[in-house]
Image (tube, rainbow, N blue to C red; front, top):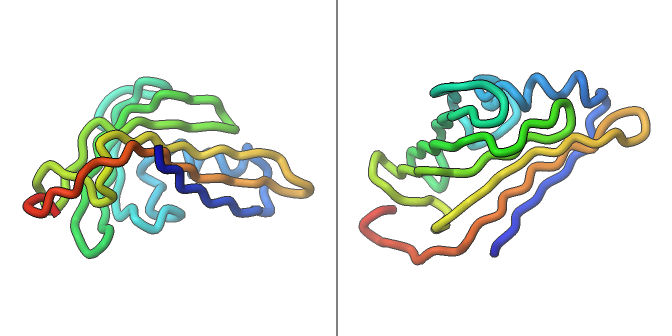
Amino acid sequence: MIEFARSRHIEATPDRIWPYVADVTAWPRWFTEAERGEVVSGDGQGRRQRMYGHARGKATEIDSVVTAWEPPTRLRWHHEAERVDGRPGSVVFAKDATAEVTIAPEGSGSLVTYRLLSAAGTPLPDRI
């Protein structure tokens, strides 16, 4: 399993940060790889969503389902399908991936952590 994590202190309470994390259409405001996000169906835990962006110079689409919805402290989603330049594949060569954002009170603000856990896959040259 490969883990990537980034944390940042933000001078705001979890309640003020949560709307930006919970709303997939707001992700381009804080998630550098997101250019657009949309809800495919549902709300809260079980919501299906899609994120469009670019990574490593390639157009990406990630379909995911929300697996943990704990306002205002935790959102987790599991990647169900990924496309790179319109074809099935993973820009990070993962065969499985789960991501989450946690928001914890810290001093006068909050510690926000983005974490990606992925099972390493084999790069497929014709897919990237």
